[in-house]
Length: 486
Image (tube, rainbow, N blue to C red; front, side, top):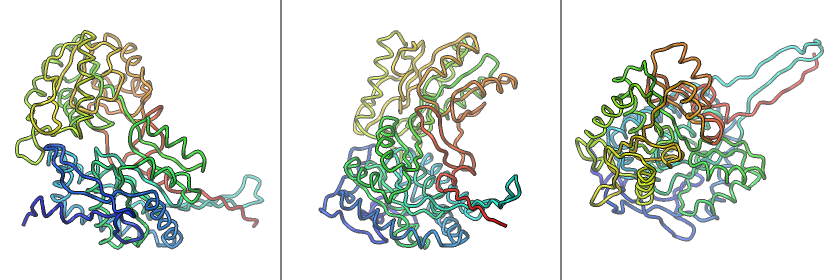
């Protein structure tokens, strides 16, 4: 029997998880969690203080030694059990996510599947951590390397993928033997709180995972980052905040991994299969309402097919239904808050003022909630904000190009380097372009690249470090070398 929305919200812990216990904020403060589709308050959760943040780190430090000794198989079994239970409760996690973030239930179910898969992947990687043995070139020494967990880790996760951005970090940390303090986004803390509760049920020892919700992120997190007992910081969010956190982390020389902003080009060459390109464009642009660092941000279409692509794309965008994500038949939910909606509107107006043509949408939707119409803008000049900044909304700016060199120069002409999308049938071009693009990930003839079995991450101002794949667990491991005289 399906649980009601009210009962689902009521089932989620609203306190701080510290040392295995749920507790109120030390000053009794709370923060409101809002439904972006209505603007109404769903519930309130504890609003942590600096003292609460310190207590969470204390708990992680106290648990680290014993947790590192737990056999890899046992750590992996906790993750495997969690994968199975998330899968069993997929509808509940999906509804919770839709209520606090706004995306449709179909998209939320997709995130639950994607997020749970990180636990299954790293349950299998836990037992594959290994070192090596070799003989020194001169034969005088035996060289042994071994892996050890980095240690207590601070994880700061974003609001746009409230479950998957947590599992993508928590999975490898558990597999490697690291304890954690997790700070979910204040807009969407419920998915993380529900996940933490589930991990407790799966046998995760006290203090291994600590969750701190707060509206005073900088104030509460900075003392943790500057504490010499913390050994790693991982953050997913904006490049601006990432730069600040890297500066703070330098004092302790922390291991740092950063998954930051994007400005993804979507390139359609003259030989592309246009049906496939439009399908890919819909995925790359409209996944998660466009509120994704991997979302296609700039569309560059060869001049010979630009008009046709733009027409087909606008038709598909115009057929989307905007509404509350919990309702049947809805394709596009609300943006996360009023600030996000108004920021998208400002970018569209900037493009219009600089000579672009809004062929579809272009305005906030009327009524309650933070909705914005699916929008297509053509003839967009390079100096328009939508071509330079991360849009984080359902807006697709299109510009044309004439040569391969020209489009590569435009695509690489950004400080960001997370992901690029390319549509072509030419294998030689595929190789040339993939080598020339200055991005950490490239999707060819597909509009989605995220996969738990692949290393996710960017270059330049999009950050460093990788999540997922064989590489993901290495971010949580140190290499120790031992020289042995035979």
